[in-house]
Length: 158
Image 1 (cartoon, rainbow, N blue to C red):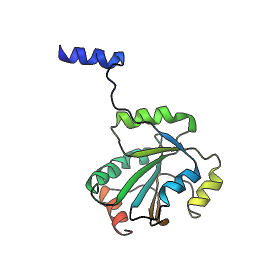
Image 2 (cartoon, rainbow, N blue to C red):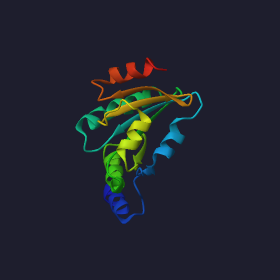
Image 3 (cartoon, one colour):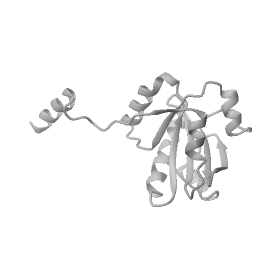
Image 4 (cartoon, rainbow, N blue to C red):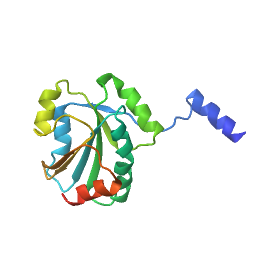
């Protein structure tokens, strides 16, 4: 009976399940976020819900975020889904229970912003960047084969 009452309250909107919302980010907003001159290491993953290798490696970022929670490391997901797909991406994150900081990257011309972020980047995803003390310190285009590989990538560049 208790479950039935709770279900009715959730469906009626009286009790709302915690839902993640997404901010749209331009290149300038992104750079303002990660190019901070502080001791935090920013691990930024460019991904999309339609990208199988991206989705496959998301648990690596989630697990390491938990493991490194007491360290000055911040994990950020930058979705490259279409700018109008914010609700779809938020629903995906909620369904998968992903609580990492996530933004919808909304820059229009990839020829400009990809080159601005990393001239060697061919534009494929997933792509992961590390930023520390106001500068980019590393970049990897392509997916990580394991959580251990991602952890090594981070540790080697701290």
